[in-house]
Amino acid sequence: MSGQLEGKVAIVTGGASGIGAATVARFVQEGAKVLSTDVQEALGQSVAAEAGALFMVQDVSAPKAWDQVMDKVQSGFGRLDILVNNAGIVIGKNIEEVDLESWHHLLGINLTGVMLGCQKAIAMMKKNPGGSCGSIINIASTSAFAALPGDVTYTASKSAVRMLSKSVAVHCAQHGLNIRCNNLIPGATHTAIIDTAAKSVPGMVEMAAAMSPMNRIGQGSDLAAAAVYLAGDDSGFVTGSDLLVDGGMLAVHPGY
Image (cartoon, rainbow, N blue to C red; front, side, top):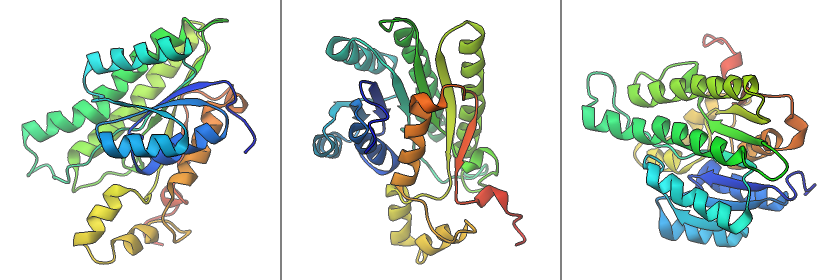
């Protein structure tokens, strides 16, 4: 690899599988020191060890857990350059089916967790040796542009994440902080969620691939490569943006 992240320190949430695991591995290959977090302890430790990263158990919806993660990074590395807010869940309930407990649980992880991550990361990035600097990458979704009728909470959460990132980006810029915040927008991507759905829905992977005019499903490595760009110095003038990695899904009219 090219060492695009040489000397940088990164946190990747939801690092035990899918996009998160691919990002952890690619960041390490590019020279970053990485702390991966997840609620899946055994899998998370295994994936991190194979990649050459550190691992911590973290519930991203809990403020104290974020404090523990930041303390670990501060004591171990003395700085934070990159945060990838990747942890997220789906519940698959439409507006008529969703209950308040499920609604709050998903929003706690998908939205509040991202907000807390941004807040804690900014506080630490402001204190970096040499002055404030950093890149925050929030994983949104094509459902932030085109709704999923079967999962109203997921759609709402990813739409909110998309605008949260823009608010964070402008705040940091207007306050003279060299801290950027961008959205990474996956299309249908091969993750544990797809694998689980495929067990009960025959042809699920093929259907997901057909969502893109490229007629293939995205891989974690596709998103990890884009994350390297947003995390590195080459994207120094990129903030508040939406980087779509969706195989053209949102570019094509649904009738074609």
